[in-house]
Image 1 (cartoon, helix red, strand yellow):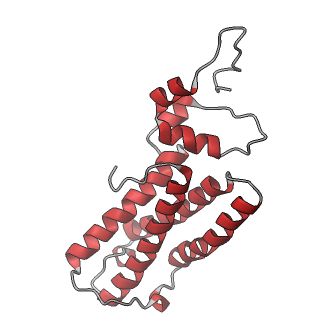
Image 2 (cartoon, rainbow, N blue to C red; image 1 turned 60 degrees about the horizontal axis):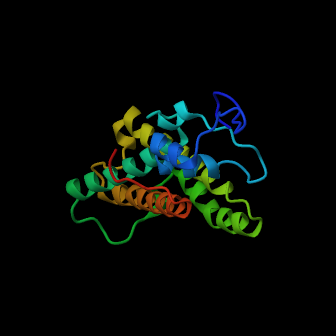
Length: 185
């Protein structure tokens, strides 16, 4: 069903999947359909699906991935010779630890999604991880010492490792859903 009203072949009110993909793109269609359990009726919000803002879950997730890619590029420019290993014990702030905690849930989400035949668990996880990534990113906007790229190379390396893990996990999850993970938006 569309948010504008219930579809009905008899009344001539319906949209084909091809038309839906043409209007909002395959990423949005896949993501929105995967958000719901297969045994529920889906109400597709066309306006939301084309919105480029935080209220659109596809945009929100893809933007988190693009932000992390940008952070990695910035870090490699500012600190081209970072240490090979990261000292993650330097990550002590709640917004850093919340990203790490969310990353730790990923294997269980995949296992449960597969075992229980509930693919909708993956986009919900992606949204939760994207929320923590955006919170982590905004902490650096609020105070410069909380940015990923700081004067201290060891702290930059630790935060960069967290970013890489989050970006890899977002990309893997989006790939599983058949949704693109753009480097730029």
